Length: 104
Image (cartoon, rainbow, N blue to C red; front, side):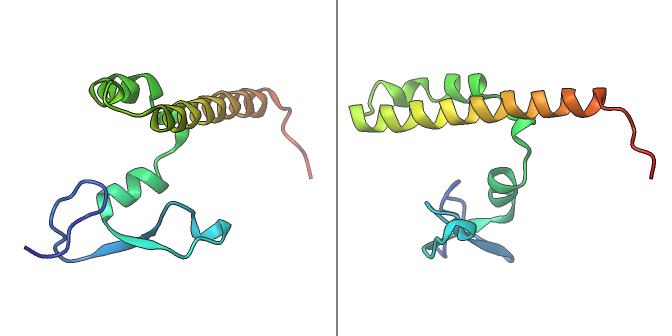
């Protein structure tokens, strides 16, 4: 078996990305893992506004019961940050839609 995607664990065929994880390259991250294009797009390019934390949390319910305190805190923090980001994006979009067009 060849190299596998770090996220979905499917064997990589053809093109793939070297994903900077756990620290993004934009924040100085240097460690990379091979990730299929689909997982890379979903992780980095899907908008937070289209992501549904509640459905993701429901899918992870089985993992939650097996997680350590530290793992649960990390997951809880991540969901908190994502929820804040979603709320911020909705506020920005609402403000943008209410803004008067600028004439130049």
